[in-house]
Image (cartoon, rainbow, N blue to C red; front, side):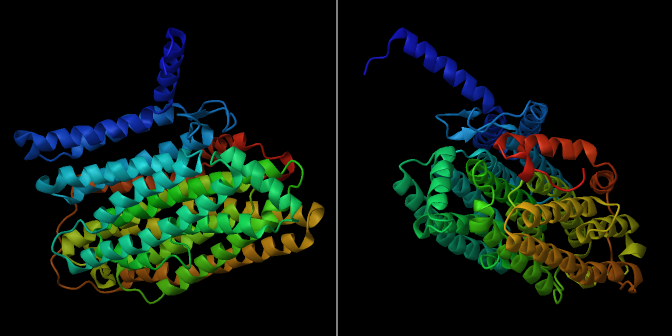
Length: 532
């Protein structure tokens, strides 16, 4: 095939446009290449390469954040690279959140000095590689791209989980992560094959239109289509650590470094929620014009049941934990279940509330893992016993940890309360709408999910407040406690300030979240969430 000059010019212009939309990911790619080149240069190989990773992530974050104010457009209009990726407002929101999580993780590793200079290049290549895959997950506009992105995010995560050398638990954690991940990926790929093979395309908007038509023709129950969708969501459930695909999470978080556990708990969850929500809202957008309750009945209730089981199991399993990383792992499972409760109602308001929740979760959960890492450095232990009388040995760490735990609990006026309130309000509004103009049983189901979420908020108080009580009221032991450096104090103070600010001032972030979900074409009567 011979390309004429006009065709070459068209291809060049298209490529320039596509690369412009791909700039945040290109910055991360540039950071990976720079780190690998530094590893080849002996003088640079002997220095700590955290600065290179910070620079790349800073550029990616700045470029993505600059696009947050763009006018919302449909995902179809914003497709690029052969419609494989979307650069719509929803993707831009997630592409801002993910580099921010990675950048904060790199800052934490510099403060805790894990990794050391020798391993820094390899560690940050893996961290940036996982971040790149997660950013692609957020913008995936094709089923094949979704699978590739999930694998790109997963493979570096496996290595990061076992990055601590010479630790049996770290090696065991990485092996379990790989085995469960391989199984989940195979199931997801089979589901993609079922859908793409039967529909004839993997382009997400076309898949959504075909799925909506099939479900509508079969009164919401088409076994072949539903089987393909369920298998796809198995892979995403693994990334979310949703029950029953959660088995890897506690062992991996306990065996991995606290810094890695913090990154996986916030970034991996954010990417998985972003991709899951994109798939479901695209399906809902295709079906809602004619039959707005079709997808909530066929899929939403199932997602809600999984979310209810996940949040309940995560909270109950956390009760008896004494290792803080394992406790936070079960907390992560519980919070994933809470987010799924919001995703399940398939409204624009609930999706915007989940985005708000993700930002709040980033600050409070990464802050909690940061305190665990700093206590580990000071005492050599990550067990609850290391936190006895922490307020007397390190008031900064104790106060910061208390703020993060109260926020994870949902205590006002902190960010966790704002996030949970908006998710619960969206579920309540969807229940009212279903009761008034849709299937009455669906409204009842939403109210049951809301009650499950509220009860679990009360249940979680036991293990969060147990840590706070240990820090404030237990007698400290005689173990020497290294002082906290000024940089760590500033880091924790900044995260705590974000947690407080997001709990007091909601409007800027809620407005950004509303813009992010406005392009999915949901009708007005199924796009309203809770109070804004």
